[in-house]
Length: 367
Image 1: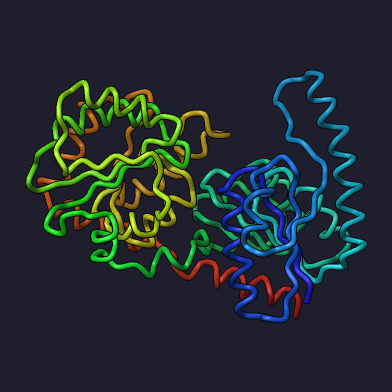
Image 2: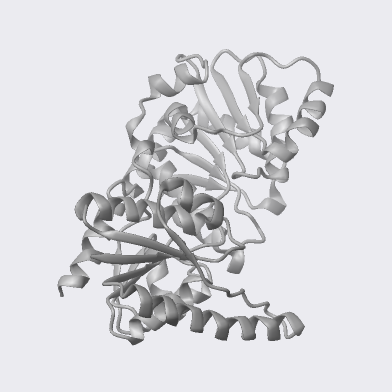
């Protein structure tokens, strides 16, 4: 069996594809899996590290206003279609799966038009444009959120699976995470991350929060600022005076599975895969959606988790240190509220999503 997986540009499209690929290999060890991406996306550096072959096509995303760049993008679209057509003719895949990003558009579309079994996986509550178009042609759409279904048209089967997450996210225990980071097992741990690059608005609010929580006997903070923000953040934090050992600030958390294992409460952006990991672990959260995400999809993600009772949402424009501290204190003091949120988060979690997607996608080949 030969399978093409295509999705790129950002980790939010790449890592779900890798997780699905790993599950396909477990179910079908004989499967040959090839990734298709562009030379300009993060996939160029990420995919080869996981041992999968990566082929390239040339294509670009579209700007929403008419410009010379838009015309160049149209030219690259036709080039991308030609490149995808050549790849499909060469590789003759039995199955093609797209996980989002403009690169998967030509690959999945041409495969579907040729009658090859195809599927897409949509991570967000508000789908991207590429997947909305592809949903009209593919056999199945795997949904990360129930809320996304209403935005898809066409005859494709829409299946709610949740978002695929790495198996190591689930394997670590709290005691292991606490020991790994040198934390106190008796204190509640607040995990703070604005994504791989950090978030300046969250960091700014956390300066106030960490000054207020420093020296507390009941709580500790594990905060990733983002590597580019770390030195400036520490300078500002040190201006406020000495910070107690219950405040741990790092530029980047290289072992997020361990950090999630230690967490009792998270302050996060609202990327789909980050939320899938939080809910799979049953971690309550205060979410600050990135305000410039395409089609504001992070707020849609955050509101879906909030509606289930698993999170509190503070919009980026409303975020202050005082407001964030008030929300954190409320949750820390009212342990029954935190426990209800933990239960709600756990109910949203879909730890078996990747396996379910792989199984159903493989069934398309038989059918």
